[in-house]
Image (cartoon, rainbow, N blue to C red; front, side, top):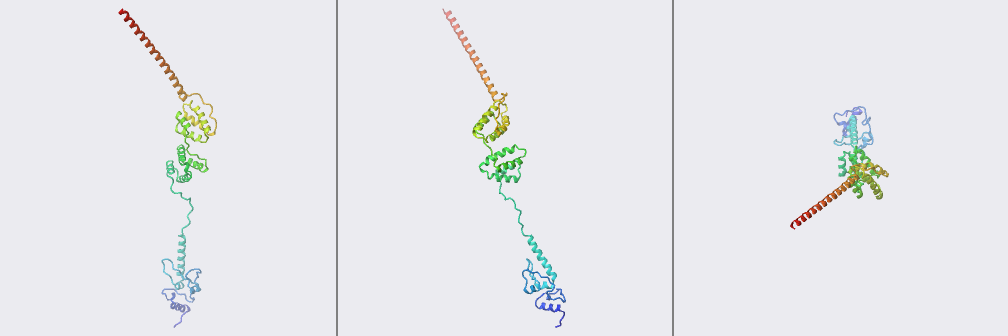
Length: 309
């Protein structure tokens, strides 16, 4: 054999071993021992013992790519570097595709109660407030109906229903919210007697519900004295709510107003007395007519008897 440079001899030996020197088109590096100058990649799997000693790893096969013989990498460092870059990119891509931990959010409470949803739709309440109200009302099942009626009543009269709802939810959370209270029998009789409107009746029942039965009856008796002399009983109730709420006395009632309950009673009394007087006069006239007719009959009878004689 004709011996050439060391690089050729090494290349022939590598070709007999099935290395990259036998591959056509691969560049050779004259004067450089096989494996010298090649970077090493410690810690990579799939490294063969011989190439590991030389500092050349065997490239692990990536998904969708065939396994590359380590000798090819030894003969072509540029290819090795390119494959290393591809592998790093694929690993980086895999890392980038790992799902990140989602930002912790508030646990969903599921579907909102239909009654709560109906109230929020009616007053155009945002979903976040609707869900908060739903969570609160789930803890108030014993007073659910009364609470919902109270909310409807309050929000109907509010300029900003959403803002008032937030205030009422705070009251529920702090335990100071009281649902709709039904009027007692005495208050119902008072409302019927003086024809109180619904807002006055509802607000009065709401405030009187804070007191015991004795204090409630005391306020109702005192309030009736003011209602019977007023031509606008519902307006009087609304004006007295502040004093009742503060536990203050209602004061002395004013004079009898025209059109008030007492005024109507007085007028009815006068009318009844007048009717009695007219009835008495009418009965007196009737009796007088009866007497006169009786006298006339007697006179005619005497005249007939005298003629017959």
